[in-house]
Image 1 (cartoon, rainbow, N blue to C red):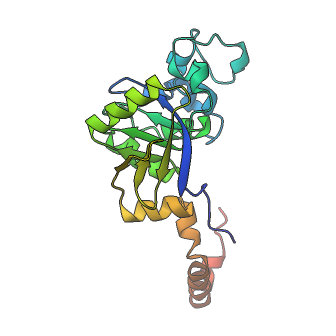
Image 2: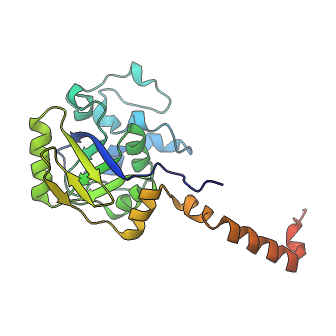
Image 3: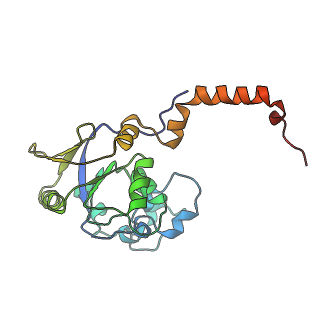
Length: 221
């Protein structure tokens, strides 16, 4: 049985989209009306819905029928296909909805770079295969200047070496907890980690049922 549940993150090179706003909360990332779905799929089209479209969005709408906001960063042609989001401090504040990293991931983002994040959002990113990188304000501002000045601006993120590498070769180091790094590089979510112990779990269940066979019978009301 395979235990890989997420796409492994090792080295990623991608187009950068700069979102020059502080305190972007999770209701802005994925508005509350889209939380009705209990599925973990289909949230990408509604990422930043209230900023991305001029009309009000509801679940089930065809994005092709919506009115996009031409001034919003993700709607600008030069940022189409971006997979690295550049943000300002306290990104992901607000409610603890896990739909926020789902929407970012399903839009196509693999990593976020910001000076700081809300704690719950930060943790949820790792659980869903999204890498939130913390860099000092000065370095983030330098990246903003470059991304806005040069169309097609790309960065390379090397998780193993913990580096954000600019096109000129200049690199910024970032920290990541060893366990989170291990999970991302191997594509393990919580279920994948558990399934690594599948043989031990089956052995335990077999031993328990052998010693307590009545557990195999369900009660009938």
